[in-house]
Amino acid sequence: MQTDIDPRSLIGRKAFDRDGHKIGTVDEVYLDDATGVPEWAAVRTGLFSRDAFVPLEPSELVGGMLRVPYERSLIRNAPDFGVGRHLSPEQELQLYHHYGLHLAPPPPTTPAPASGDRSFGRIAGEED
Image 1 (spheres, one colour):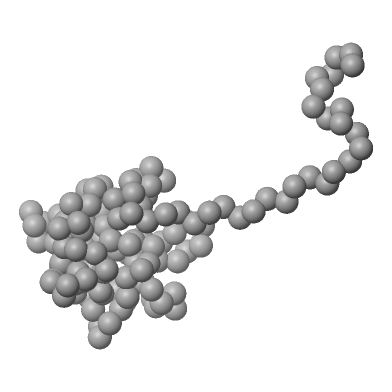
Image 2 (image 1 turned 60 degrees about the vertical axis):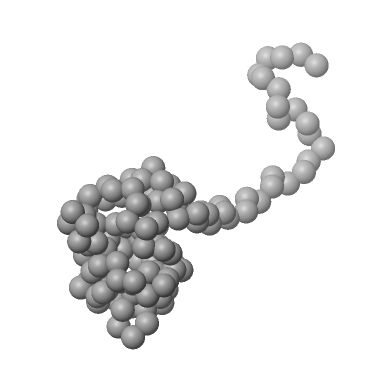
């Protein structure tokens, strides 16, 4: 998804599944806590007036509509967390699993420099 799009401009747009079937209308957009990048859209499906969360990556904006690369049935069966509240990390993890997405790996850590002193693992007061 384009990162330069104002998330507010997505609200009210029609959303379609990968086969071109209408899912509903974008109700809310949720931003990533760390980056501020739009991450999830809550789409009002019309099915019992519930919102289904859809990932904005790898979705795309095409001709003024949101194209979500998943089948409508998968989208409609997404976990229902309600809207208007912050998504917890556990809820986001459930959504990632539901859509078969993987979280980005954490940045690599820099290993501690090797030294000749191997006493760093001993408990204070232990004898060799």
